Amino acid sequence: MVRDVSKWRELIREYGRLRSLTGHTPQSRGQRLNELIVEFLHCWGIEAAASVRTTGEVDVVFAHSGVRFILEAKWQQTKADTGNIAKLQKRVRQRIAGTCGIFLSMSGYSAEALADVADGERLEVLLLDVSHWEAMLAGLVPPDELLRLVHDRAAFFGQPHTPLVDLLTPAAGPPTVDFGLPDGVQDDVVRSSVDGVVAEVVLSGIDSDQLGIACQRDGRLLVTTAQAILRVDLKRQSVAVAVPVRDCHRNPLPLDDGSVLFARRHGVGRFKDGEVSTVGGGSVGNSSVLLNPDGSIWLFDNGYMGGISPSITRLGGRVGDESRQNIDYQPASAFSSVWMSRDSLLTIGNSSFAVTSFPDGGTSSHAPTQSNPMGIVHLGCGEVLTAGDGTSVQRTDTNTWVSDQLVDLTLNPSVNELALGHNDDVYIASYQPWVGPGMRFAVVRLTGLRRERVGEGGEPA
Image (cartoon, rainbow, N blue to C red; front, side, top):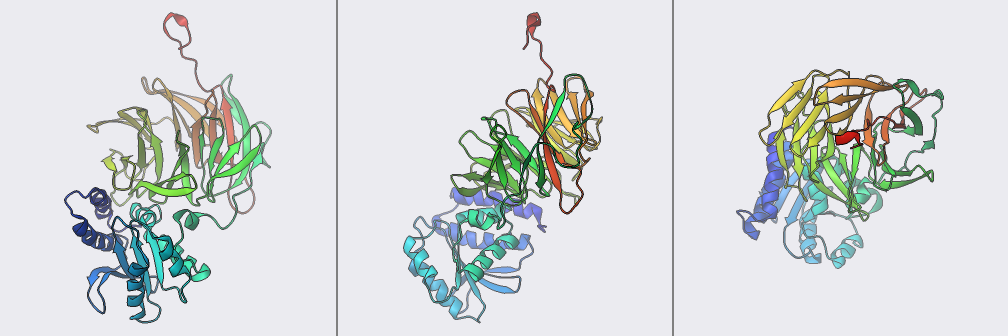
């Protein structure tokens, strides 16, 4: 857990200003980057120092997991070349055996530099680029994890520079997926329902301690597992890896440009064209990615029991572009949020259903009529579906705050997520009854949950 959340979030904002050279020259920006790296490591409990003047000045020194690191950072327009790296290699050799060098180049490396380091007699320097740095800074891959991953790659495989996506690709393949009913679940997955509601188990037996679901425009599903985010075609009964990143959580967000946004650890990543980049971060609690009706991307964070308030953060194109606003809700008690309109956010949990208005942040709270509500989708016209209890789906009209239970399923009363299909379908992912090691979840398709809206003259709206 990060030790100083406020400082960490301020450093993320400052990094955005450094990127745009706000208040800095290129030279002063490079100097400030060294200090920012040290302050960032301190936030995560890693002792570090900047501008150490000994045998050859070193930008940053720190220790982690018994390894002593010396780091050289370059923020220039040109890529780092062999000569830049050779200076750090010399400084490493001037120190006790076991000291490891890290070169951080914000503009990447020349092909010659990468080849020279890889073909050297002994690997003494790890090479990081801006993608590694931004993933660390935002918390997508916290420093403890990233340092371990790059050090292991160098020690086990002799790789000085490993692309971020390769660091996060799981060693094991994705979990198997069964189409249809899981073992041990009765043919009728519905315990009770209102007239017209139909439930069908479309996926089951997915071995994962993380779950999430989203629907693409072409009707294929994105399913979050601990090993990767899967793309599932129900018509063809085919499964492929959509995002080869382990330890993602909750619902992914597919975008029209073909990219997929995902929540991981404390940040939000983007997978597109085979590469992973970091969009933003700074979350400390249970977080999820939300799409506002105006097309903007947001990160919901339910906060931390230590006094960190829940928040909603507007994400920009890069780390440091975030704009965060607190939500008036008990820390670590909210489960989910959904945008009701461009400036109205509904947050749900056992404490209340709370509607926050922006930009003033005013909140109105309403007593929940469902225990443990977690999954949520907005149907439009102020109506939402929530999934909770064990496992029931409820419709609430936020104009009147009248709720009615639509269906109760024979799934485990635990974590669940909801997603809207592109017809009248609604999908729920929830853990299924299972005897054996691990946890297995199923995906159920629900139809008949969306109430027909009537417009003027009695015609369907």
